[in-house]
Length: 231
Image (cartoon, rainbow, N blue to C red; front, side):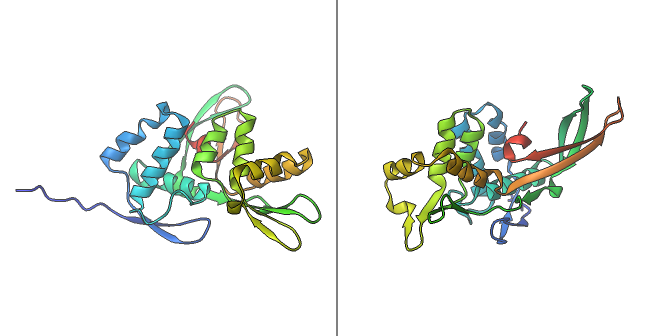
């Protein structure tokens, strides 16, 4: 006789980028086992694990390869909340040297976009660049490396198109070499404008406040981006 099947609870969240409702379920034991390997995994493996867990736990109803990275981060943290617990333990370093044990609730996480953020960057009076939000693969690769080439690759991979007063040049119609040549022809000031797209882009944010038991200082810490929540 076959064993009875368990009913797995389902939950719902709203994607920050689109406002679309997405149903999801917690990690199962086999998936939690995979999650435990992340701390020892290579960068490419980390992003692959995150993508695969998000895909299977959302019943394969979303395309994880095209979803903005902050949507993936947001879903992943809520998967963690419903699978392991809403509370996350963190250590806050006070300026007096004391290490303060505290925690925060994942349900309090917010996706914040800095003022002035736009995906249309004008690099001259007549020429602009439309940027796409990068994939989780590109984001993990950049934050895990000090290689400046990774930043350049991130920018090239995120270009959606180039436009002027009369035409739009879709990046999909250009070769990789043409996109590289275009980016390398930018001045430092123009390149910095593209970097600001990522600096001001949406990020999951948690503000943590706690008082130091040693010196009494009120500490306010801000965690941004998935990479900080794995520390």
